[in-house]
Image 1 (cartoon, rainbow, N blue to C red):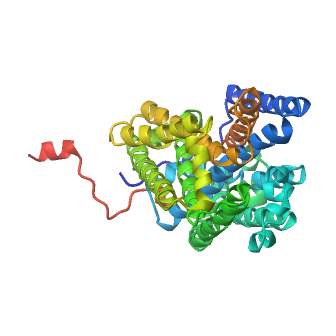
Image 2: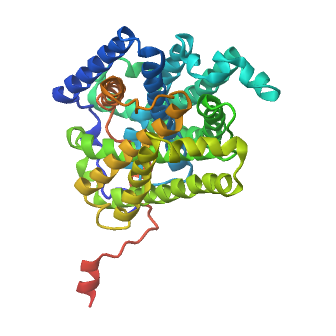
Image 3: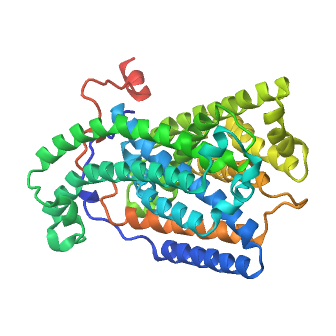
Length: 437
C-alpha cells in the first residue's frame, strides 16, 4: 500500500493529551536518574562511572534524535507516501536535538573532558593529533556542528508543522488550540498556499539537512567517541556511526508508533503494511550495520595493525568485555537478522515490538562497548545500579519530551497531500482476483 486510502484529517486536528500514567512514569524515571547521578557523586564514582554512563547515553540519544532528522529528510526528498503516518513520531525525536546540544555543552564544561586520555595526559599524543585534539577546539567543533544540525532541524519542523497548525486552528478556533501555535502560524491565512510553500521549503531543506547530518555526525564520531582511544583510528568509523544512527532512529520511530499510536488515535492508519515497509528498512540497515562492522574489523585483524589491533583485543579478548561483545553481536545482528527474515513478524505489532526492543537495548550496549573500555581499566564490568539509574533518567526524559510533543500537535500531517495514494497507482487485491475469475 502507498499512502492512506480515504484519509480524513478532521479527527486528527485536535491534539490529544498524553496518558497520566505515561507522564508520571517518565517523571519517575527522571527522578531515579537524578538521584542516581547525585548518589554517584556522593560515592566518588562520578569521576569515571557517572560521567562514563552519561557519555554513553549522550552518544546513544544523539544518534537516535539526529538520525530522526535525517530520516525525515530522506522520506521527504524521496516523496515517500507509505511513511507519512510515522512522520510525527520522527519529528518528536528530532525536536529533542537542541536539548542534546545543551547537554553536550554541560557535560564538557563540568569535567567530561577528563574521560579523554589526551586531555588528562597531553604527552600521549603528538604531531597533527596534538593540534587537533585540544580541549576548547574539540568542544567547539562538537557543539557548533551539532547546533547547526539542530537549528536546521528546527527550521524543518517549523515548515512541516505550519500548514497543519493553521488548518487545525481554522477548524477548531484559536481558543481551542495551544497559544504557542500562533508563533508558528503568524501571518498565515491560506492553508493551500502554506501547503505549497511547505513542499517547496522541505524539498530544498532535505538535501541540506541530510548532508549536514552525514558530515557533522562523522566528525562527531571521530571527536567525541574515537578520540577516547587517542592512538586508535578507523577511516570507516564516521560513516559507520552516522549510518547506525539512522538505523537506531528507525528502531525508535517504530517503537513509539506501536506504543503511542493508541492514545494518539492513529492506530487505524498504522496498518500492517506500514510496519512491513518500515521493518524492511530496519532489516536492511541491520545487515548494513553487520557489514560495516565486519568491514572495519577484518582488515585490522588480518593486517595485525599495531595502532589499531589493541582496540579490538580489549573488547574481544579481555574480560569483562569479551562476553559483552558476543551479547552485542547477538542482539544487534543475529536475532534481528533471523526474525526479520519473516514477512509476518514485521506485520505483527507485538512480535515486531519485541524485536525492536531487543535492538534498542543491543544498540545501547554497543555504544557502551565502543566507548567505556577506552577509559575504564578495572576488572569488573561498570554496569550496576548507578549506570542503570542514570540511563533510566535519560530514557524518562526522552519519553517525557516526545510524548509532550506528540500531545501538543496534530497526530498526523493533516494537510499533507502525500498522505493519500498516488492517483496513478493501481493495487490488485486477492479478493478482486478471485471475483474476476
